[in-house]
Length: 191
Ligand SMILES: [Fe+2]
Ligand SMILES: [Fe+2]
Image (cartoon, rainbow, N blue to C red; front, top):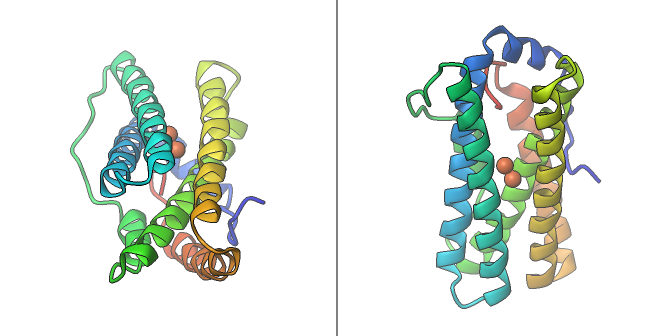
C-alpha cells in the first residue's frame, strides 16, 4: 500500500526539471531536516529502546542522503542555498495533535510515514523522467530507501498502538495529506 490518496501529476516533474539546481537545494534541505526530525523523536522517547534504535538508524541514512545530494550540488558548482520554509512540511506538522504525548507520538509516526511516502512517490516520478545515467539511478535508489522508511514508521506505530487506533488515525491523516499535496502549487522543490 502506497498510503497516498492523491497522485502527483507528471507536470510536477516539469517544474523540477525547469530549475534542477533549485530542486537539488530543496532536496538537500529535506534530507537534512528528515535526519534532524528522526533524532528529535529518538531523544523525546529515550525510554523506548527499539524506537530509539530505529530513529538513530533513519537519522544516519537521511544524513547520508543529504551528503550524497550535497556532493551532486558541489559537482554542479552550486551551494546549499538559503534555508526556506516548506509550506507542505508546515501544514503536515499542523496535522499532528500535540496536546497528549501518546497522541503526538502516534501522529508523528504516521505523518512521518506519509512524508516518506510522498518523497518515495516523487523520487520515483523523477527517476522515470530523467535520462539514463547517474541521476536517474540515484533517484531510483532513493525511491527504494524512502519506501523502506515509509514502511518502518507505520510498523513502529502498529507496534506501539492498538491497530484500530492506528487505522482510524491513518485514514484521517491520509486524507489530510492528500488535500495538502493536491492544493500546493508546483515548484522546483520536492513539495
Ligand atoms: Fe532520505
Ligand atoms: Fe526517508
